[in-house]
Image (tube, rainbow, N blue to C red; front, side):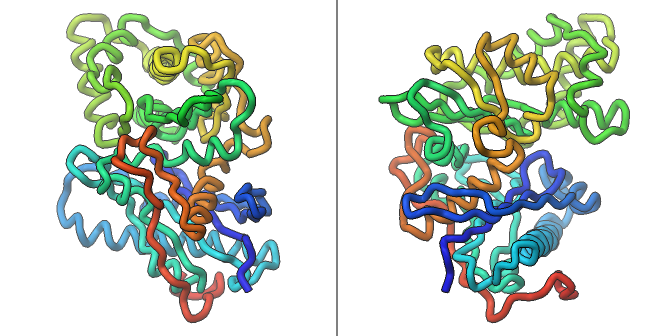
Length: 382
């Protein structure tokens, strides 16, 4: 019989890999991580996902093939973690699989996370909960961020605190005792930093912010980046993604800036982009929750010590990774999707109108029944 074991799978806007957790839920719905695994995103698949962020030829077929490939990677991660923990597929209640966001335009009524949940269910033999965002969008919401209710369940305490996820895009959850849970995207986290270092040095990311540390933040460029983008001034609820903060956005603003100012060193641009992430977050927190006493950080950006120092400088608050509060920083989102799957199975709403702007709270996700039999990690279909 299935136990209260759920697998959570996440591949974020940084497109660097898949994080998987096996979580056990108690009767109150509080999760505990049994085991976890991270698999790198194959380079060809990563490049395809990034290409699908923008219009191109033969998009429908390319998207379908990429979704199938991701489902196989999800299946591999799931089966490996079950083998490591000696857990049979029949003991797992469900898989919560986010998919890969390639387009996000809730104002136009859609958000697209590539995934093939039916294939994942067939390959693992486990029911899959997926397509977590579209019902909220259908109800007039942003479909993002999805995790504030989870952040409240795991990190709420007796004083006001914020939980900040630093993936490709930054989103913040404001946990204030006595107030509604609130959350929204604040702008770029790692997305511009990764783009710039890849373009300048060929490195996939700025390890610990070491390259940014060799440069200096340029105040004029920072002001230009903030002042030239109306999205930063929008009031919540709001969300964003690579549809806005992409190479075209960055290169266009740099070109405009260089029409009025001397060219900067590449590492100075990196330092400025790092401060852009920190300042846009700090402005959002201070404007919408000035009583916040501390900030907990998760996601890949939690490993960037330079960015954390910039956040401390801008926020003037204690900033610490969620690893110091019981959940490894890089596993928070994967655990969140296990929790969202648990909420779906229990018939409980997890998308909150105060966060997304939807007309009503909704149950997140769609359910795909498990396959006839689980595959093995050596199956050629995987």
